Length: 260
Image (cartoon, rainbow, N blue to C red; front, side):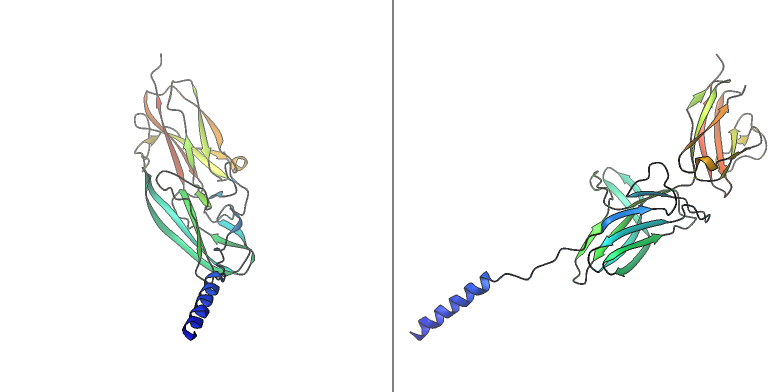
């Protein structure tokens, strides 16, 4: 009888242990109302998780500000990722900056101020959120197998972007599109055939006339256009060179075709 009673007690204890609820596992903390900005006015195309930064120490669009809200205390790590090559689902990623802070619940922000030497391009701000129990949540949008989910802030480092149509005949007007937040620009045309003076170090072509200075303050938030009349120039390859006052330059090639 004693053995039978002990067996009943053991089964009862086993049933109680099996039916008792386990300890509740809280999910990893989330970044609520996640967004990124440059602390100044947005450039054309910027949105909640994309901002444009032009680091040149002029106090305008010099940094990326990641803001978010935490419901609980957590540690947030910010890794700036530079994608060196993305092709056929494969990529080479380099971490160029890291910041890590522990926050209480509430509204917070992390700031990345790129060096002046950071190349123009697109950078992913990967965010890793962890709690005291070691649970982590990662925000990232590096392409995987060709698919992209925009979950992390993205920063576009802007220097100067120049584009022009591919070919023109003498007497036509070329429209040059320029994207930069510089206040002043210098525009010049370079040629291999009829240029004069010191060759440009990047293209090897020489200017056909002195550069033209332009005031660009009205185009700091979106691309603007410059009209260039194609003169009676010999046919061949030419370049538009647009330079900023702080030493950055953008180029766009075009061809002058023979007259009809």
